[in-house]
Image (cartoon, rainbow, N blue to C red):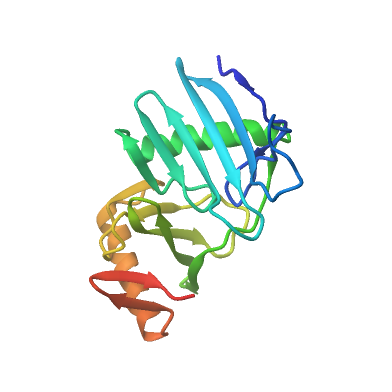
Length: 211
């Protein structure tokens, strides 16, 4: 059984924001972030999802809090960027995160926001490629690499992979069935194209998307 609890009326998540309910002690006379918290059970384990959103300024992120770990979606785009405390695979954290987001969405408890990101996109041979650079507090830069079918706008992601050090080497495929080696080949080609187009920059062993 998957149970949901918490004080938030709606949640802020991924290019999505879980709209928060009124939180005791948060006066609206001064600028405050929107905060939402949902407690839930999944496959016999208890978790919490916390969302913090600053409109136009401040640090906005979602955190999945589980037994012995905290994972963060730093830019609220629906992808877990890093495990910032404890141990859990990124793929497993992503699976749990997608479950709770899907459940909340079915209850009309999610609100979409436009995250501020450094994004490079292009299309080639029927596929849409995207590299997004995110700065995770305490972890440095992370690149998210996505591959989708260009002609199927509503289709789920074919592949989502993470370059945890933004060094040009993918560390893990967290969604999709594409082998890591094939994802790396596509990622390397995308980096070279982005550098040629002056949309990506190599600096101090990092590969980052330009603003």
